[in-house]
Length: 112
Length: 114
Image 1 (cartoon, helix red, strand yellow):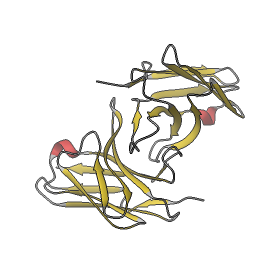
Image 2 (tube, helix red, strand yellow):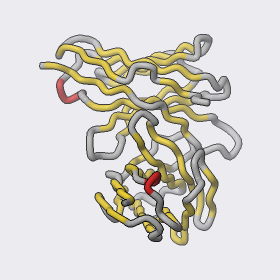
Image 3 (tube, rainbow over the protein chains, first blue to last red):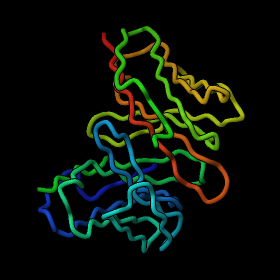
C-alpha cells in the first residue's frame, strides 16, 4: 500500500514564526504536491515537485516555499506564519502525470 | 476564475437509492477527470477516473459519466450506503506538456441516511 505520512496532525504556531511541514512517501513516486483545504474553497495547490530539487508554483504560492532534497521527502515552509494561513494542509504524491494522487492524512495548522 | 465547479455543496439520499454528484468545468483543455472521497480528519482517497476519450467508466457501485460537449461529468453511486457519507471532490487535469496540476472543485458533502 502507498503510504504518505505528514509530520504532525495538529500544529499551533504564533504569528511570525517559521513553520515547517514535512511529508514523506514510501513508494518512490516522482511527483509530490502540497495543497491547502479551506471550507467552501476545496483543495488549492500551493506547490508541486516533479523531481528532486525541482519545484513549480501552484495556484496560491504566496507566503510559502518548498524544499525537495530527497525523492521521498517534500517540505512546505511558511517563512513567517500569518493568521490567514490557518488551514488544513494536505500532501500528496503520484507516479505518472495522469495517475491518481495519494494523499496524506493532513496537518491542521492554527496560527494565532 | 473557478475552472471546476461543484454547484451543490451538499446532497442527502436514502440508503439503497442512487446518489448523483455533478461537476462542471470551463477549461476545454481538460482531458482527464478524477473523483476523490474525503472523510473528516483524513486525506482524500482516489475513487474513479475517466479520460476524455471515454464517456463512461464503471467500477463496482461507482460510475462516472462524461459529457464533453456540455463540459459536465457526474458520479453515480448505486446503491448508496451509509459508509459513502463523505465529501466528494471532482478534479480535472490537462494531459501533455509539463502540467502536473489537477484543479479541484469545492466538494459536495454526501450524506446517506440509513
